[in-house]
Structure formats: structure tokens, C-alpha cells
Length: 424
Image (cartoon, rainbow, N blue to C red; front, side, top):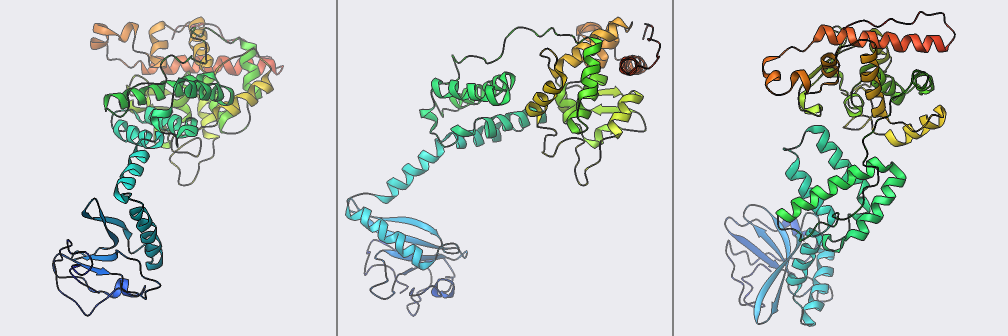
């Protein structure tokens, strides 16, 4: 019955209306018992002797909440353990839990201490730390960087999610890095390694752990600068070997535009100006955080327009929130089709820049195409030189696209005159 608990637990005080006519006996009583006008009402389990659980009560507060609680004594003190919200717990389940808690009490244990320990254990898991880190960094990282960090920690480091942070050592990290390198490539492994290291460094600063287990692990890729420039026949081979899907369109656009992989792979429909023949990348989507206007050559525009629009999706490529994501498998399949010496998607960017220079495009225009802040746009020079070189960039990319079109046509047997170098 509703009571001040003095008959069973004299230390429990009761406020609110006194409703002695009401009692907790069946499941129907949970929502039938009235809400007190003030404070809270406690209704102890008054079911049949074979059903009731000693110490179990339904607590109803004036605000309307109904929760099952368990009263018990430990160390001479009356304590209360909250079992759960009565909207999601049945009376039978609450009774079963209360009986289990009573067994703990009879063994001299304190259920509240055990509950706190479990909460502490959950808070110390890698998965919890990952969530806290991402929540803290979300407002400080560019969208692309945050999406990459989320992918690394959520997917590539998933085998560590249920491990306590304190149990993760250098050996566990190194072993997982080798697996990531095998399944996703060494570059992906190194990027995942960097993200993990940043998370542990943040955790140390927050007082959540004492050491960074990433320290001392090996990088999975070579540290040497990449210098591969593709020859014309290799460009033709790649152009002809790409599949007729998102990945194929992305590779051709990377070849024609000299942009970074994620800038094209994460392209939004709002960033494409078909009428103006432009791609307009906002600062949060570029490596140097500077907005970038990229002219589209007729060949690049044709390639882009060939991509079917997905209803309801703001993305040009891919299905996830960050754009195209099947890089490793798609690249492996393309490599098998091409049969070339090892090359990377970034080599397309380097090749385009190098070959534009061979075709007579001036260095500062190539820098503008690449959205580099160096040379003519660096330091004091950049303060006074605000030109975007829009016309020069368009001329340079048109020249480069015509070169690509020419070598592809020549490889197919067409009688096409090679483009002569000219200044852009």
C-alpha cells in the first residue's frame, strides 16, 4: 500500500498526499495509482505472498514519472536502488530484478556499488571514448576531416570498441594496423593510425587515460614523397579501363581537373554550376580551407553530366553522408584491368600539373588550378594579388582536356593532329 515506509523501512520518509486506499498488487496498478499533488508517493509491493518481492516499490512523483525502486539496508544504512522506468519495465520483471538484488544484499554486497562500477566500466570503453572525442571535435574540424575521423574510429577501429581503454596496448594497435593495411591499403592504415593517435592525445589531456598506445607503432606505408608521373599511354590505358559507374566518372574527372580525390568524390550537386561550367568548392571542403572555383572543360562537363542524379540525395557520387567510399576495392579492380606499374589517384593530379607545364601553362596558373597557396599567392604577394586567374584557369584546363582527348583518339587509330604548346 501507499505508506511512509515506517512499517518496513522506518528511515524512509514520505511526502505528498496520503492515499492509504491504494496499493501495488498487479500490473494494472502501475498506471492506475494516482500522481501526488506534491512531492512523491511510494507504493510497496503488496502482491500475493508468493509473488511479492521484499523491498520493491513503485515511486510516483508529482511531475508524473513512475519508477521501480528497491529499498535495502547495508552497513546499517537504508539505501535505495533505482531499477528502471515503469513505462518500460513490467511488474514481474521488476520483481525478478528485486529478488536478484536481495540475494546480493544477503551476501553482504552493495548493489549500488556494483551498479556504479558497471557504469564506470562502460565509460572506460573505447567506444565511449570514441563518441566523446568525436562530439568534442565536431565543431573544430572541417566537414571532410570530421567524416574521415568518424570513418576511421567507427569502422576501421571497430574491433577495439568493446575493450576498456586501459587494456589497449601498443601490440593491439600494431596488430590492427597490419590488418587494416591488408584489407584497406597502407595509406588508409596510416590515416587511421593518425586519427587514433589524436584521439588518445585528446583523452590524455582530458584526464581520461595515461598513455597513448599508438606511440612507437610503425607506419604501414613508405614515408618517401611520391614522384610518379604517368605517361600518355598510361593515361589512355586508365581512361579506357575505367568502369561505367561512379568510380569510373570520378577517375576521369580527377584526370581532367587535377583536383584531390575527396574533393571530387564528395562533390555536392549545389557545388556544380552547369550553366557557368564551374565547380565551386566551399572552404570547408578544401585542404587549405580556401574556397575554390574550378572551370570545367567541355570534356569534363560531359563526364559530369553523364552521372545520373539520385533522387533525394545532395551528392553527385556515392550513397553515404560523405560521398563516394568504395575506394580500395574499386582501385584494386581498376589496377587489375589496367595492368600498369603501381600508381595512385593522386598521381593523376601530379601528372596533370606536370603536363600542363609541358603544354606551356605558366606556373602561377597551374597553382591556381591546384588551389595551392604558394609562389605568386603566398605571403605578402598573396595579400596584394587577389586575382583568381579565372580565364587563365579555364584556358589551361581546356588545353589539358584537349590533350587527353587527342591521345585517347590517337590510341584508337584516329588521325588527329597533336596539340601544339601555347601559353595560358
